[in-house]
Image (cartoon, rainbow, N blue to C red; front, side, top):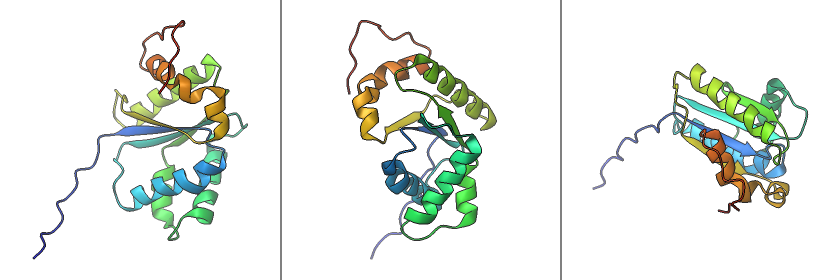
Length: 163
């Protein structure tokens, strides 16, 4: 006899930042994986997705491209209602990974998303670098410094950060 699976508690509101969101890995794997979590009702109600890259995209163009990626790469097809719910809180930040102004824009975007989701302290963040260029440009090596900056702490300018 097997017991019925325990009902999972939804996670707390959080944001997911994808550095290099214009890349193939984000389109083929990360976005479909997030869709699968949404379809399984495993994302929190206060979930937000922020893509960061150098391309000149608007928020609407970002959402359109994510919708197209899901249509092409989702393993079991997609439901429009689930896609709409996932993309409702998607935003795009244009910038270079080695430019502090990019992280200023990201910080403002995360704060705005936190306010709109009803969570004033939107401090639970998950970050994913999805392209080889991100790794070569130092995104992976400087993630600790960027997260410290986003949290309002001044990173040590002389320290080398690594993960």
